[in-house]
Amino acid sequence: MRKLILSLGLVISAALVIILVAADHIDAPAVGSLSDGSSVEDITDYYAFESPSNSDNYVFVCNVAGLSSETSFSDDVMYEFNIDSDGDNIEDQLIQVYFENGEAMTNGVVSADGQTGLESQIVAEGSMDNVQLFAGLRDDPFFMDFFHFVDIVNGVGASLSDDTNTGQYDPERDSDPDTEGVQPYPAAFRSDNEAVDAFAGTNVLSVVVEVPKSAIGDTNGKFTSWVEAKSKK
Image (tube, rainbow, N blue to C red; front, side, top):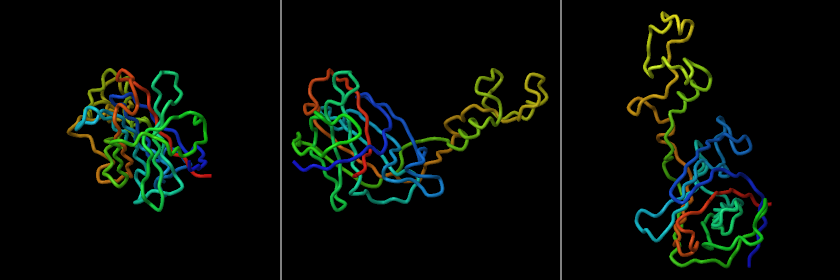
């Protein structure tokens, strides 16, 4: 077995088997900034779902390096999909994706015995039947009206709990005694046709692994999953 010790770089997001999504774009100072962009250790989104083309498979997707100019992965970073099948919040199985000379590698679904903690070893003995792997650039799928969100967080306009907030621009708000002195910009999120996707046209580096459900075992269609980016020591 090849052994490679790695330390925890970032833990982000959790997912059930259907789908649960969280997003983080250069929020962690250790992995990027607005001026310098993001690094390949910065996980922006994580997705886990049943394959739309094959109901016998699960798909795991880890997106990294949002809002950056990164176009390739690092041989010093491994992405580890953790799978907890018995509800104890401890990983029972792993899917590890690592890189050698820029080429993505995986050993499929492997046992997590002895892997719990901040360090991991690459495990060579895994289930590789019908495993598919992709790693490369993709359009950032996360939709967010980011700058309007910042306005809300910074208190521009009425609070989200304002019962008189209509969600529309109202130049007469200052004439209302209940809202006197409040800027005439409502804090509600914009409607679908008004919201602006701040991430449109930006890229992420995406790691996608599709594996048979049988490789994970009988979980009655439910398991907990999370992903980590780990840097080589």
